[in-house]
Each structure stands twice: as C-alpha cells, then as structure tokens.
Image 1 (cartoon, rainbow, N blue to C red):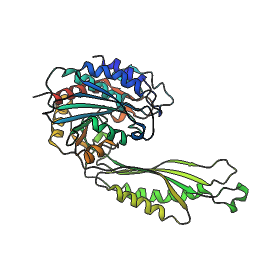
Image 2 (image 1 turned 90 degrees about the vertical axis):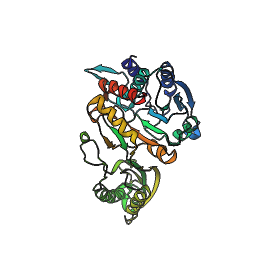
Image 3 (image 1 turned 180 degrees about the vertical axis):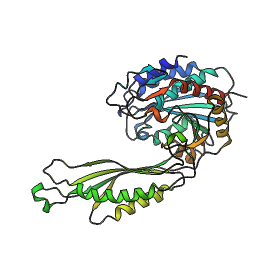
Image 4 (image 1 turned 60 degrees about the vertical axis):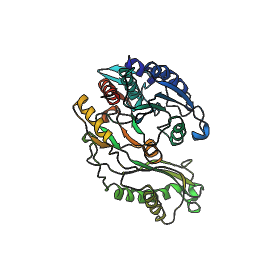
Length: 385
C-alpha cells in the first residue's frame, strides 16, 4: 500500500472549513480503501440536530465483525484546524517527514491504520473490530459520537482504541475541559464623556486579575499520573488560560461590553462541578463588575485506563520501537468521557503525534517511520497469537 500517496491525498483535501464542505469528499476517498483491506463500510450522514445544527456532517464506519470475540473500536477524525502563513494543503515529503495540515493530527494515523489493516487482511482477528472516521473533533463532536453508537453496537464494555494521540507509549488519561465565555457589561458613551459611561474593557481587566489569581492556585496542583518525559513535565497538570479577549468598537467610544474566553483543563483527580463552582466564585468575588456567562462547554474527567489490554499494547510498542510506557496526555477530547462513562468502555490511545510535529502550528509534519511503526503495532495488536 502506498501510504505516503494516501496521506498526501487526504492532506490535500482541506477539511478545516467549518462548513464541512469537504467531509463527503474525504470519506468518499477513504471508503474504498477500507473495503480493499477487508472491511465492510457505512457512510453515515449525521442529522443536523445531532451535529450542533451544522449541515454536511458525513462520517465513515468500517467493520470486520466477529461477534463471539471482544469488542474493539478504533477512533479517528479527519477534520483539521485552519492554517495560515504556509502552503498547508499542498503536502511535501522531505527527509523522512511528511508535511501538511493534519499530517500528525491526525490523518497520518488514519494512513497507519490502513497500512496495519492491510497486513492482517484475510487473517483471523482477536477482536470484533470496527473503525470510526469522525468529524468536528477540533470543535465539538460529542453529539455526533452519541449518534454513531447505534451503528456500532455493542458498545457496552468495548475497548476503544483512539488513534488521536502521541506516538511511542499508551495514553491512559486525558484532561477534562471547562471552557467559559464571560461577557463583561458596561455603558457606551463618547470617550470625552467617559464619566457618564462604564468601560467594559477596563472592568474586564479586574475580572482577568481575579482569574489570574485563580490560575496561580490551580496550576500548583499535580496529578498522580505520569506524563512522558519528552513533554517536559513530571505529572499531569491542570491549566487555566485566558485565550481570547474581544471588546471595543472605536478608539473614541467607551465600550459597553468585553468578552473574555477562559480555557480550564482538569486533571483526572479534579471534579468538573467543583471546578465550575470555583470559577464562578472567583467571578462573583469581583466587586463593581456586571457580567454574564455567554457560553460554557464541559468535558468531564475520567479515571485512567488500567485494563490488562493496556499492558499488552505497551509490550507490543516496546517490541516494535524499543521504548514504551503508560502515560497521561495533556490533551482533551469528547471521546474518553463518552466511551468510559456512557458506554462503560475502556478507552486508551496511541497515535503518531510528537511534540516537535507542531500540530496546530505552521509546518506540521509526521515521521514516516512512526506511521510504519504504528501500522506494525496495530497489526500485531489485532493478530491472533
């Protein structure tokens, strides 16, 4: 299989557009490839009411069923973040690296999966196996995953193998998410008559000071779960970041509102409800400022996966690469909570992402060797001993 050509082709299909205009195209490209490696396929059109009102959401499910065997579901996504300042959708290959938006996050892992499945085509598998090719992971896909469950039955107690992860070890835990948009209110007047108005931008500064105080408290906490040494941390750590500020119309107008976007990431030991209460108490402590919550997005934390299958996968990784381990990931997503809390499944992860691959940044790339190694790991994991 020409996995390099396949990866270049799917990178060149720009799936960063929030309209989803190319989702059908990339699914149409991948569907016959999964059929060639021995899988039955289903193209699933997600109803708008199960896709946050967005049209054109098309997912792909692929199956090699063996109903008497343990259930295994591979997870992947084909949407990517936007790209500016580089030729992101014209992939290139240089020095063992494939460059392009989504090369590592996570179209490279889709190519590795195809390569791994080709290696076991026609051979008996250990698992009743399905593959999810999903959309909108980079925004919000929880309702889409829930909709897909009906086509993936049984999901209860399933092993869920996420390919949206780092290379070289098993990811056993992720960060939870609490994202909040806070609208600080004011009163707009001419700047020369500012004594008659209320400056929402200046009041927002008071809110941000309080949030930064909370940040210093939050970021002193540590999980008991190790992260891989190459991440530069010892243990998983929580986060509180003010990532976006919008306010003001013109230089000569006192602004009547200012929007602050906060991204709070939770370690597995933290509780989402308590984290939200802590944030709201901090906002309420700011005197003389009127505010309201404009948007809130939540992804609960889940305990780390400690199933024996994780140890088996870690051993295969070591056999293929010479290194391995079980570590927490400093990333988040909708899948772990749904697979664990709603499906009663066991979710773990291995992909082709390395810190230097610069996912979400300019000149994102993936190592060809990592794709080849992941394919070998997948084929060994699926093979009957």
